[in-house]
Length: 435
Image 1 (tube, rainbow, N blue to C red):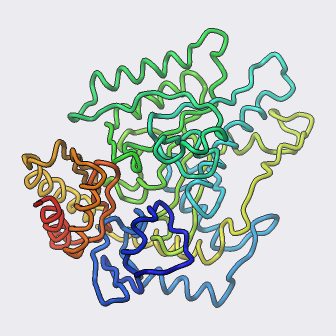
Image 2 (cartoon, one colour; image 1 turned 90 degrees about the horizontal axis):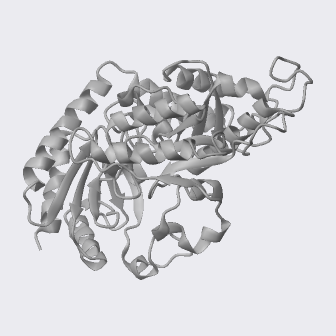
Image 3 (cartoon, one colour; image 1 turned 45 degrees about the horizontal axis):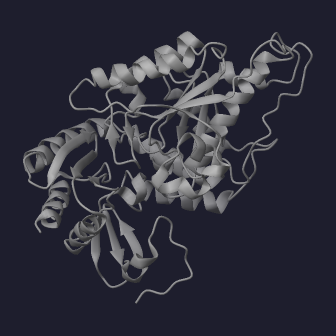
């Protein structure tokens, strides 16, 4: 029997007596204290893209720990934060960005919400006749983290119902249902709702931003939509003067087959939230990447947008924001991504995953739908909670760690997983469904 003082996140009390104790990670594998080896089929909550204990990331952490473990970014700087900010900005469609750091994805979202509202407050200045833009639009059943602002825009009834009273209202538009390459009627219906929100009589200029997970809603069961929908949302935001906030915390850094998912839609988000894979899961770090047109309105020196030199400082931060060791890990991670052919290999593996998953499960009697996007594969099942738990346990017994979401059985393995490893995961999934 397992005994611990840990309060395990997202873990039922009834399941605590039978959980592996992981002591070591290497590549795509996790090693438990009892000698059992597992393939990490979910990249340890979607962040260990390069595999566990990647030597270049480990070396960077060790070297930085010996030189400068921590230094704040309030009125100070350090070389790693400078270099990382420049590299992240260079990865955006346009490099005119500034980067605000935190330690987790929810905090990146929280900052984005506050930045969006204060940006419009800054633009409004003392013009009392102009409406405040302080409302948000999000998809149905999203997930953006578990801090209260993130919960408000990313409210999921199954996760957050007990704390609903603490949230602020958020407008919802339906998530398109991807049944083919194009969402078609589902996409148009969702956009019609968005247009209606932007054009409400007397409230035409009250929406600050549309916040969404790019191309795939992870925690709600890998619900995928086509790039055309994201492009249409971006166009609507531009027409109505609202900001587009793309949550790439789970979908960024190659997971969908491109460096960032929004690239597939050809959009240029105003704010991009990053996390998880940014350090290959080695250390907590997240980033809110903001266009300079927004950043400059926080300037407290006299300028065209602030002639009186009003204090518009963004009074928001975290103790370990941009920690030097975390930034070193991120720089090493990005260096691996820059290697020639890395993303080509990811796309080849993603194509293999889609072919193999579809061939195996499209006609499986237990599977109602197969969905794939980059290195994400999802099987929709029609099973009870108890049946899903039993499937998970059988897959674990076959040597693979997966964590179903509701009736969705998904795999999100490290991007470096070989075809042989992907086959092993799918073999285990077949074994899990065999009963």
